[in-house]
Amino acid sequence: MASLYLTDALGDPRPGARVEVTGDEARHALQVARIRPGERIAVGDGRGTVVRGAVVEAAPGVLAVEVDEVAHEPEPSPQLWLAQALAKGDRDELAIQAATELGVAGVIPWAAERSVTRWEGAKVARNEERWRTIVREASKQAIRARVPEVASLTTTAQLAGRPGLVVVLEPTADVPLSALALDDVARITLVVGPEGGVAPRELARLADAGAVLARLGAEVLRTSTAGPAALAVLNARLGRW
Image 1: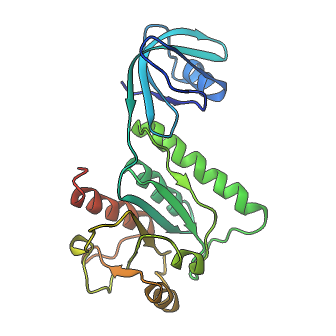
Image 2: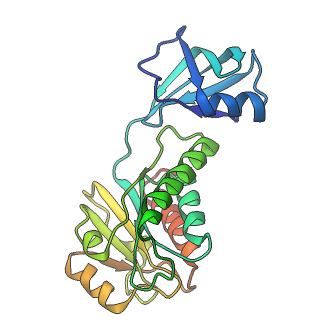
């Protein structure tokens, strides 16, 4: 099964129930994916519930599925978050797309000191919505039960106050990420800087607030690569892979 569609009206379905997908999701299924009656698809609410079943109606504007399987995915613990510095081009977007495929619980757009790209005025809401679209589409591609949350544009001061364990990926750090203690942690936020790295005073501010610095390896990774690489390391350490 290679298709997942999302709906806010999934409710609490049971086998034998009929679930409908409408709006843009239905139009995409019918006009782009060419879904037809009899095909099996998955429908999720983006909050942990996914149903599967055969399509029983494929009419303009509506796609109906008869449910034969219901799965509820509990929220993972610890949650893995990615604070991604704004970056030029589409590098920050590539990072959050891959992070979504790798199971991140949420992403945080970070206005770092060395970020060349700036979100100001109307750009803030527009770009936050673009990030939501990216993680939503990546969740569907990965057939994820949970769509990651997209936090509001965040400053360094706000990032320093995040709950749980905050880990700043820093090539000069003494401790490798693979050796970091993860016991009794409910949330881990990975912090990735922009192309020029995290500024020294930002490192100091985050460290003063309790963040730990960790390195990934001998290589210096691009801002689009570091977050997904770190998530892969943590997924393996936590036994999720």
